[in-house]
Structure formats: structure tokens, C-alpha cells
Length: 129
Image (cartoon, rainbow, N blue to C red; front, side, top):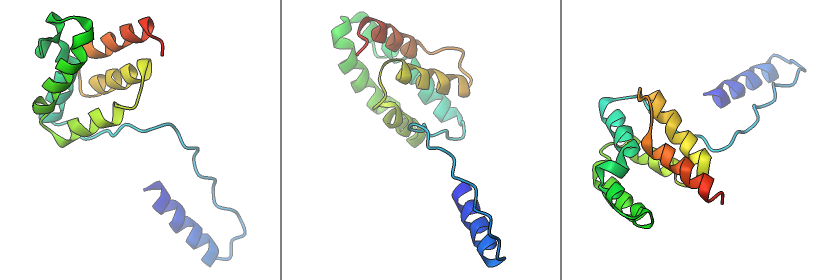
């Protein structure tokens, strides 16, 4: 939307004979996390992601076995396209950045906390790579 507005303003300035340069584009930030409209289904997906360790039974397994259990559980239990897109968007993030993104989304949909984000922070503290 901003780019369209910038193009329209630039075209208008060129046609009116204005010599002032168009405003500089905003600096590019890091990867953006999509922020879909919060539906009940999407909120349920984020809740499932946050509680996946318990919901999947991974909390009953050794820490090195949890990742596979969690991944297998999430596939059939994330029900919205937005939930899947969110998981894909945070997949490349690491450590506290990934935890922060999940925590932020949990707050955005109305959750007071996110267990998985806390677990990721604990893992990052133990293994800072």
C-alpha cells in the first residue's frame, strides 16, 4: 500500500513539474511475520503451538526426542492456513528471536503466555548457537 502511494505521489509530482525529490523509502527491517486477522481458529492454532509439548505428550519423553514428537503432532493439529503460514514464517528464526516471535503472536491473539516460547528460551540459554 505504501509503495502504491509512493508511486502515485511520484507520478503526480512529475506531472506537476515539481522539482522536489520523493521521500526516501523506509529502511527495510528484518523478516516480517504475517499478522492475520485473529479468528477463533487461528487463536486455537497459536494456543496449540504454545501448548504443543504437553498436548503431544512430548513432555513425557526425553528432551532429545521431543522435537520429532512435536513436529509430527503439529501437522494434523494446525487447522488454519494462517496458523501454517505463521509456523513457516518463524521456522528460520533461531533462539530468542524465534521465542520472541511466538510470544508476541501469543500476546496478539490474547494469550497471557506461551510455554513453547519459554522452552525455546531455555534451550537457547543452554545452547547459544
